[in-house]
Image (cartoon, rainbow, N blue to C red; front, side):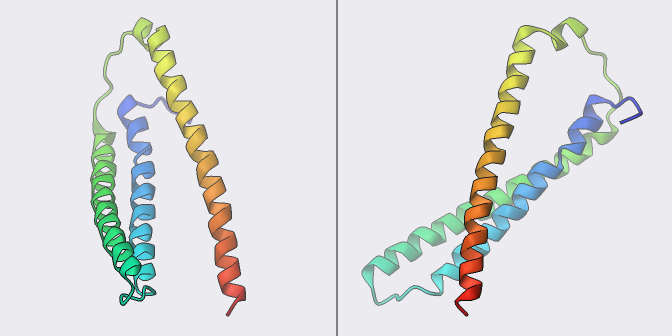
Length: 131
């Protein structure tokens, strides 16, 4: 980053996060819908699972849409002009605490995604080898 960047430009660059999360949520909808096709609906437990998965798929569809909208709004911020900031507020302890909390949440999410990725990758490999 050789050029100075406005806060809005930096925020717009982060639009990739909700966009990618939206894609992940859309893929989850597909997984939930595909899983339902394997259910034996003559079984009461399977019918309960189907109802639960249908609700979850609906919930994930709403998340997908909301995340996509958020990504679009974030991208729309890129052309905001440079705003004046109060430097002491930018380095105040509360600001650092909030940023540290954000960074920690990023770390935790990255660790969870890595773990889930490895588990799902192993599941996919097992399913691929069983055919």
